[in-house]
Image (cartoon, rainbow, N blue to C red; front, side, top):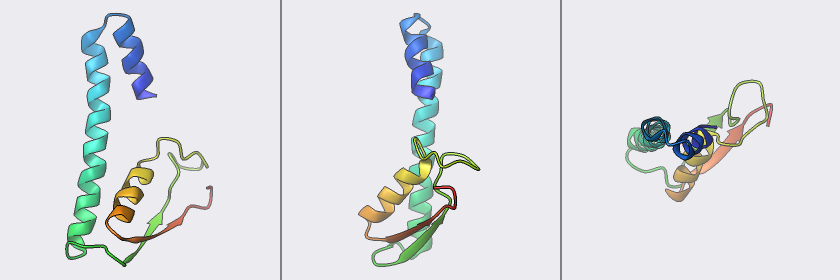
Amino acid sequence: DILNLSYIASTLGLTEVADYWASTVSMNDYQKNRFTTNVIRALFNTVTNKRIAVLGFAFKKDTGDTRESAAIDVCKALLVDGARVAIYDPKV
């Protein structure tokens, strides 16, 4: 995964490469937060007690693998804001 690439590059003294891979993780985190904020904003700035369906939860298509899935962080953020989250993924 990306964090392992960053770690390997760092241990090999490839600081610029390690920083590049670490920045992709940072950008992915930013996009998850941005997406969640946009969902909340679209629902009149609150999702408290609103039922939100998440269609697809796996890390990638046609797999039951949820490790590192962006949906995990998005769902957690929605739950913290009081949403009632319903997840559907036929593979999970």
